[in-house]
Length: 233
Image (cartoon, rainbow, N blue to C red; front, top):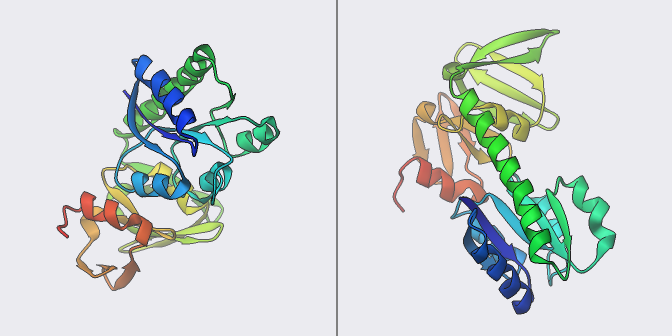
């Protein structure tokens, strides 16, 4: 099942899309939100595959919301205005639906989402059998096994991979590095840090200790960190 969220400030818009979701056997509705704040709160609590997202909403627009998320789900924009189409595809929207949305057009968008979800799952499963990656550093490709990584620190357009014996700086961002690492071993805990779960030695308040390094836990990552590390409130 594809876990989806409807985001529209208009009750009628949420109602119509809710009916379409209920009629599509591939979709499971996780929630219906009326603004960006509700979406952010929900994403901190629930895994979501796709947002059916209105663009013009009070407060933060749908477009601004997508640009603000560190690891956004897939998005299908739903709007009455066609002038945002180009910008929508610039933020990697799967589809762009103009209101009024027909059931056929909606289901076509769902088919595209289903294919994207399938490809993402295949990429994850194929990577589970590999225990290493190659990164470009010092004019060569260096092999780094996942088990040796303690944490990764983002340095704007670069990241620093820290192991017990090495510090490797490579040209990528923290999001790109997270996509290369197995999810069952690593956690994004801050906009600038990824940690290996089994290397965490202590947690005090919002600070993680790994070796002699103190790593902050970002507010938007705190709930997921506590869940993944089986911490009680």
